[in-house]
Image (cartoon, rainbow, N blue to C red; front, side, top):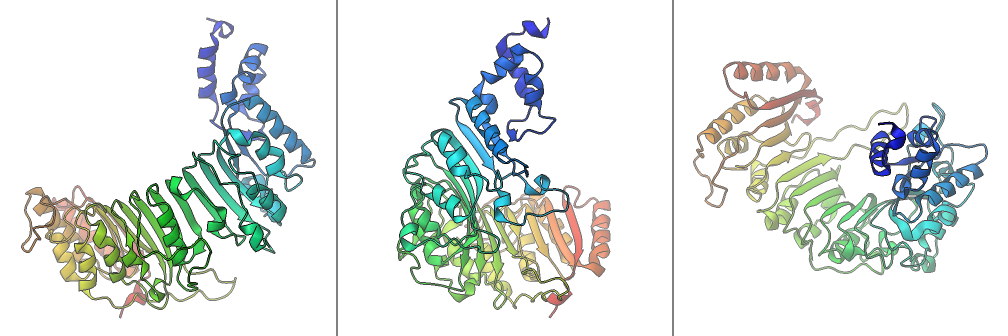
Length: 488
């Protein structure tokens, strides 16, 4: 059958298999949509009459001699999308948009059109009621203000938003007055908004955005430092809706109730929260919030730490996780990378972790008997008695994935051999708590970092054990690293 005789529905199925789900504006020369539309009048008519072909667009900040042509392209695309719900992405990869080796010199170059026109007034507002997903970089005070002042309820179909606020590379902060900060309306009366990601580099306070916190299932503010009070306020506002969150909490400049909307929260319960990622800056200064935070449904907790003076204090997390013993399955601890240093300057020395008694880790492990994956930070070692308790199932009986570092590592493969043998025959070591799960899981994946000089020794040891028939179902990933600075 000739293609000209194919019914429209079948042609559309073929068309959607031929091109990506999103339209790139301006379209590259290899754009499949343009190519198909030029085959014949029937195909062009069919494509222009199908709004869903044009409902997802990426606006690339490619430099144009006449930026006004970029605006014309955007408006043409909007007409083609007709009444369809839209997904707009103004955050294309600027590295691919700029000439090779060239970096943007002003924040406006990150925006579609390079600042020649206001993307809010010219593109976003004309189709605001149809936008279901919005991702964009918004720069300069005038454009930021025009966005934040969008009348309440205008973006009524909005379900997901990811916004980067940046005034400029030189003058990073946007000089809003207190009155302006309290009058932002864009996110008010948005009943469908469920996902909110913000990268705030211009000084806007997260609470000034007046988000519908009690609707949000996903909140990502991981690039925006906030005080513990503000974090607790957000958790309190979203207690019934939040299922996934990423927050950066800075304990170094603890300003009591540093915003009019911040509240003194005696405790906060995130009832639906299942995945939480915390980036903590010097929590040793004041770790009260960990005992006030309740996470009854948490399944995955990731903690990233920067605390050069105190290091890891596991006791502060034990008090929080005591309320989550039956649900937590994934626990990941990692150190934030050290700050960058100028070219030519010596790197900042890595500070060894503080001395930690084996009982401190054991108390933490006892609170999470259903844990299935554990990642420990570099330099925080599991003591031999604790490793023996894991091997015998007295601690972490359901653990299947383990990531750690060790100054020798020789005990780890033998501990896994013991653990998996007991699991195979459904045996438990002496001293196992009656409250722990009755079954014992075999460990199937181990990542271990050891000093460079011990890497090959440990690999050979694992190979010998596998040659003897042990560890056949265990994936070992052994890498060498600079651990000498952690030696006492």
